[in-house]
Image (cartoon, rainbow, N blue to C red; front, top):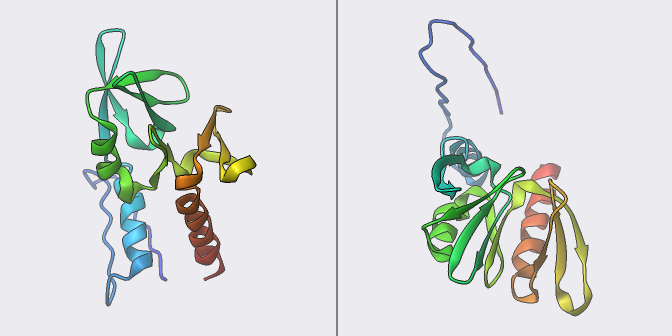
Length: 152
């Protein structure tokens, strides 16, 4: 793959153009990673609405029919349901960790297997989230994809 970076102060904003004979899996993954930098979510904290960069969200949790967005510095409430967020974030490396949790794969610091097929995920900020046995396979597959892409 050939990579070219053109810098010019006259450019009004960054623009990414990908020229390829055909958009394969690697190209589509690259496009998805670039899109994460454009996506925003609305979160409420202390009665104020905040526009959050999706890339800054560590994980999403639902408790008592309320959905919360966790960043390194704060916890925001979202009006969206977990399944709505899951659908919108799937292509951006967010994956289901349990019935009420979605994690940002890119914000995982470490993973430890636990008894009963569960996994304990430590996020970049040190918080820990359990991945249930039901969703551990999806996480393991994501790890295998990561290794395969590294070996290419």
